[in-house]
Amino acid sequence: MAPLDQGKGVWKSGKGKGRKTPKGRQVDDIALGEVQSLLGDNPRRRDLLIEFLHLIQDEYGHLSAAHIRALAEEMRTGQAEIYEVASFYAHFDVVREDETPPPALTIRVCDSLSCELAGAEQLQQALKDGLDESQVRVLRAPCMGRCDTAPVLEIGHNHIDHATPEKVQAAIAADDTHAHVPDYEGYDAYVAEGGYATLKSLRADGDWEEVQAKIKEAGLRGLGGAGFPSGTKWGFVRANAGTRYLAVNGDEGEPGTFKDRYYLERTPHLFLEGMLIAAWAVEAEKAFIYMRDEYPAVLEILADEIKALEQAGIVEEGYIDLRRGAGAYICGEESAMIESIEGKRGMPRHRPPFVAQVGIFGRPTLVHNVETLLWIAKINREGPECLNAVEKNGRTGLRSYSVSGRVQNPGVHLLPAGSTITEIIEACGGMLEGHVFKAYQPGGPSSGLLPASMHDVPLDFDTLQPHGTFIGSAAVVVLSDQDSARDAALNMLRFFEDESCGQCTPCRVGCEKAVKLMNAPKWDQDLLEELSTTMVDASICGLGQAAPNPIRLTMKHFPDEV
Image (cartoon, rainbow, N blue to C red):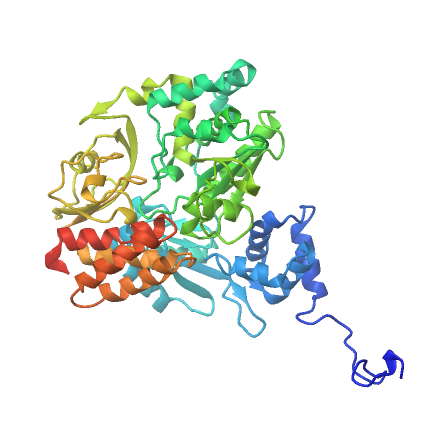
């Protein structure tokens, strides 16, 4: 019998074309050098993938196949893994070998409800018609958190309020494509007013249970939308032994909401002190701030002020880890946000276990909203009465209402939590000239639409549930007799269709089918109700469960339009 290595068909002869490289796309040395230069001394940890993708996107305007291959080599991970993460997020442009990269300049025009009411569709069309598409790319984009200055667009990283084609031309001519950082209270000014004295005192000899009792006495509830009692969370997290983390949910993506941006662009240290008090209370070994990419000025402010805290010795270097989102509404859901912090696609996790037990890197994690942490600092400085001393219409506390639409003075209005829509419109100086109040969105698209006849309901936690809706993040959009409830509902469902993560069929397919049915001249109400029931019952997370609200409430309160 012949030796094995002489067996025909087993080994190639020496004359064959033996493979000199592994299969698949080869590493390009130039691209590898570019990626290594961008990554610098950063550890090549898997959870930093999204941060690294941002570095490449910012530098080159897109993610080329060569750069993805080089990044895979550098991080010792698969190209498919990087591709699936990059293609999940709206702010990354993945370009294959045979594709043309996008133009150097991108304009994103917000098309959420407040901007649509202010003429965003016409603005987008005018820009597409008036600009050279080989030089400037014009895209529609979801809410940018500037609903009070609608219509809004982002040119590069520069937001233009009350946008017009003329303002865009001027910005292009001046190369004004970078974020404009507003004046805000910096570290020195905050400390001069007594800032961080409370944190230092608590760290010296504070009792976390006393602080927790104070938060509970104030009646503070989660202000990202869920409304869960804030102090109660601390006990859940502390009940778990070992390493614990804190995560700040700064992914304020619910259209109509801009309160977190409003506060961060003015008093970032009030938020940071609240965050550090909460981190102290649960003995968090690290604090992550997940901030949406649509807030470039806030990202700059926080990066600078975190450095100031490190230099002042308030925190150790690296204790606060600022993470940048990449354009995915779903990452406002806490478990999807945690997936994104870990460098993955932002897909909600199945629960239980809850993040208080199994959060970032599988460890117990306390998740708070930006405004919630602002109040934690205020309550500890001024006492629970700064929140619970206010009563109105049987409700206790204060709410930051983000108000936009057909009112004289849109903006963030801090009002008693029991305020009705009538009182909120009054606080905004009334309706716009020539507009008659018709309908309102009490808490973003997830809350649907209510008619003007329901003007006496206090807009607070628990008061709207009997009416088939909820307050959520208190994103109030006011519609007038010149607006169509049907068109508004369709705008909301298009948003959900775009932003569904695609993980579960009821939400992914349900939103798409709903948009098609709502585009019909006359709605098939029985079929839409059947679809809504399926989505509410079978969707994994709040997106699919709340998406039918605009459909149901429009059919209920505006039957003549559908």
